[in-house]
Image 1: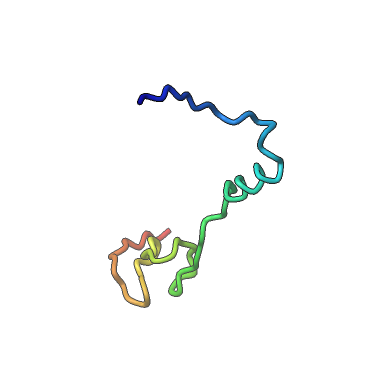
Image 2: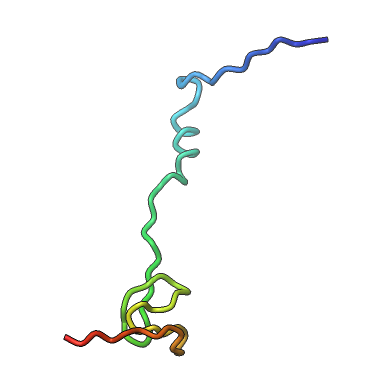
Length: 69
C-alpha cells in the first residue's frame, strides 16, 4: 500500500503569537565573555594566555617581545 502524502508548512495564522514568541526566546545576541589578565589587567577571553604579557594562571607561557616607545 503506497500513500501519496504531501506535507506543507503550517500557515502563519495557525501559529499563535505566544507560541511564535516562545520559540524565538533563544534567538538573541549575547555579549562575549571577557576577563582581565591578573598580571597586567589586559582584557582577554577566558582560558587564554594574555597576548600582551604572555602569562596564564600566573606563569609565563609565551615569550612576548616588549616593544619600548
